[in-house]
Amino acid sequence: MSLWLGAAPLVLASRSPARQAMLEAAGIPLEIRVADVDERALEAQAGSDDPALIAALLARAKADAVARAVPDRLVLGADQTLAIGKERYSKPVDRMAARAQLQALKGRTHGLYSALAVVRASQLLFAHVGMAKLTMREFSAAYLDRYLERLGPAATLSVGSYQLEGLGIQLFERIEGDHFTILGLPLMALLSYLRRDGWLMT
Image (cartoon, rainbow, N blue to C red; front, side):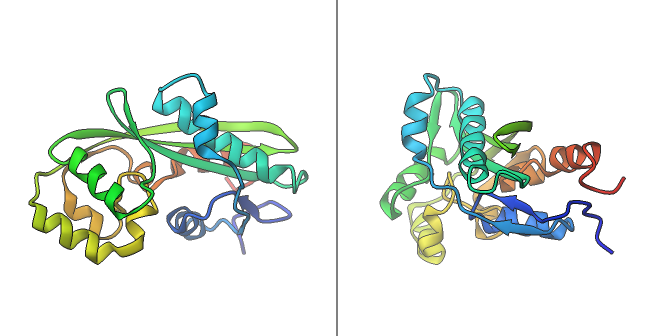
């Protein structure tokens, strides 16, 4: 029997394989509906460079966009931002941008902010932002080229140009924070909300 008590699966407003895998492993049935939002335009309208605020804004916008199409369903939006101090990074647009991003991050500690928003019928039911600190090691130009070659198109799929659950773990010397937050979804906070609001068995 399922631990999920909802009449229909949770709608995930994200194409992230990592988020999908986390939720499915936790026993939550999903329907994937990718949100069509202009992330850069929303960032520009935010009026703030705060990475936590930007992540929360984007997570809510994605959930809202999908919820308009399925107003009777529970929709989960999520987003992730990366920053060193006030310098914020977005997903690289190509391999050259990914290389430049990794060059800028190497040998330094950055903050990774993962936000989620749960929406139903245009009402925000729950929101949360988790934060982790990651310190990237020093590495050679030859290593970086080989890493990007091995990664291929996946280098542009995430902010920071790494997936910690894969080859990206080799870029780091220290990680402080919740594993799920680093992967892109503060799962423990979400599960706690879903139990509290009657969507999961307690």
